[in-house]
Length: 140
Length: 409
Image (cartoon, rainbow over all chains, first blue to last red; front, side, top):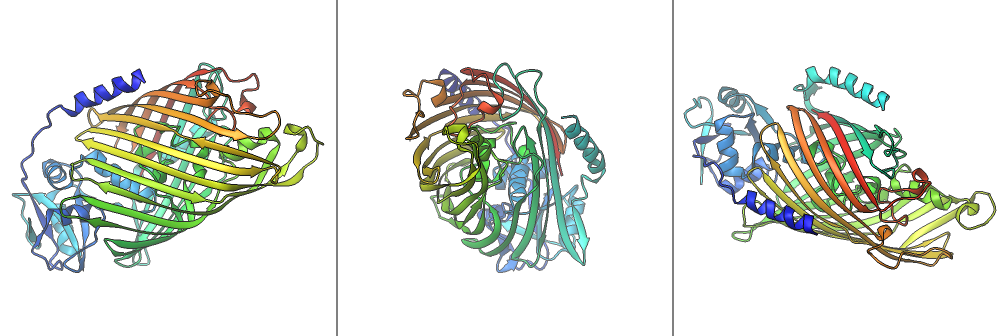
């Protein structure tokens, strides 16, 4: 029991450590087939956590960045998970037969290109990235 | 062990160039293909553990691998399957299994269906306990997620209904309700354990129903939940009465069956940044008639654990847990009884664990883990210590070193 007590104290100390702050400098984009022009933060989280697969009655497919500042900002702002926890979450679904692994792409340009050509795709890119061929969704 | 290591290396060498090639096109359909493999080594300072000969140099009979394929048939309908195989000392023994095969129809966020061989939703890690690469620890807290007894709860042949209900201020509630049939492998810990009593299981399983309710609370990062399972299990066996009953040295058919058999589980998890803290409590109660109804045994297992893990950086994660396992019970076989006190080493197993997980590359990891165990839990319920690999008896304390490496794609 002493060991359990010390473990709990150590966990409590680490939990109080300050975390790095993030600015939400990321924008959410979608294929033109997605009729909505806005999405709630809750719905966006549900889509990315595979609890929801439609917006405004249309099927949607989430797309991720593999890494980078926009990726970290999106995870922090909308999903509340670190990248390692999110990847573990997806793999838990995939390898237990309860979900699939969303597509992950290496750059803003790749995400924009994929979202532009894929019906139902939604993704996120840096706030300053070119979004030619896709629509930007307002997140409320 | 050498064979397992060689297989792992060859598979790794072939798979590494293809690590990113996880989608294939077949007849205009995209199929996702994924897999994993791991190789472990266990050394104990005394007592042989998990059916391996670990107390001398150690044992590498700790290998597992699997692969799955899945595809989206329509926007709402997905199908996939996974095969799995392992060797864990005397368990598994390279008998491949269908791990799951599921058809999943997503109707609404609050109502969906899946059927086939389905991984059972229970607690935090029941449905992923055999996926080593998902976890910080080389061995999950063995009181709740005993690797030798995982057939008891891992999957069912049947169907689930499931969904998530969102509330405005009280968080989200996710539910799963299931019904089906449990069919255990003949190479798990329970069939192996029964051999000490002269019983050789030919078929083991039965109907199972249950559910899970988890609450993603309004407190960011905090999840809590509860699970319940009820089952009626029957074992068809061959009995050699000379082993445990003083009878003739013959094989005769025998049965055992559940009279009351259920699992309650409560759990919570908190994650903030790179920190994760989990805790679970499980009660597994079983009242069964054995030796074709001649005798009866009740076992009441009540394990719990607290664990914490922290990711230091992209490569290194540290973790620790305390696992607390207690067995209560009654048996009316002449000459057999449970020890009178929980403080007796055959009535408990307390395990303190420290772990380091190193992510060597994006899909390749290694773990090094120390276990400091007090007690061994006795022989009425498989909990890692078996008399067949400990013919001199089991001493009260065991310290173990577990090293594991694996990859996934």
